[in-house]
Amino acid sequence: MTENVTEEPTERTLVLVKPDGVRRGLSGEILRRIEAKGYVLRAVQLLDATTDVLHRHYAEHEGKPFFEPLVEFMMSGPVLAAVVEGEDVIKGFRSLAGATNPTEAAPGTIRGDLGRDWGLKVQQNLVHGSDSPESAAREIGLWFPGLA
Ligand code: UDP
Image (cartoon, rainbow, N blue to C red; front, side, top):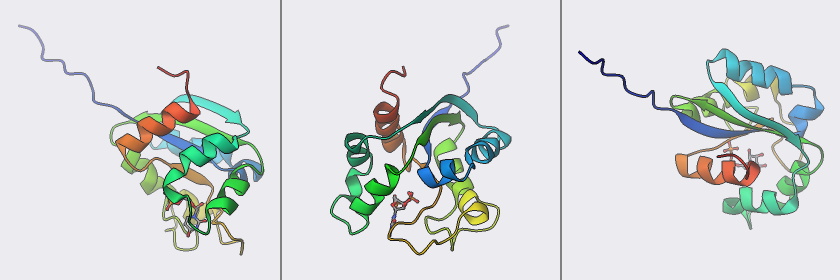
């Protein structure tokens, strides 16, 4: 009798620790929360984001009032980019991250526990996580062009 072994379905998402998170020394704490949840880090790199990558990454927001300040903020220091893997990880990481506005983000989430409003033009909310499988594939290609 052969065992019916099915491959565990996995999903990948692109996580960024934004410059505020790196600057505040929270990269380790954020990666710790991702791993403690049971997700797997497939690739991690610290880099200075280019204007080209950021314009493509945030293309859907082009033209909005916070767009240029957002790109400027994302270039204000190094970014930690990670490919994170696990069942339903796209939705799961966004739950871990919490609401976009860190003031409104629930306690227990990364933004709720570690972020706040700094009275700036851009919400400095520590992390980015892809919002759909299509975005994840596009963003992983953008930040990790060499990854299979
Ligand atoms: N953002 C902002 N002001 C806004 C909306 C968004 O500064 O009114 C910034 C914020 O850093 C956010 C990013 O733009 O994380 C992308 O916005 P999105 O709505 O995609 O939020 P996310 O998916 O990151 O929660």
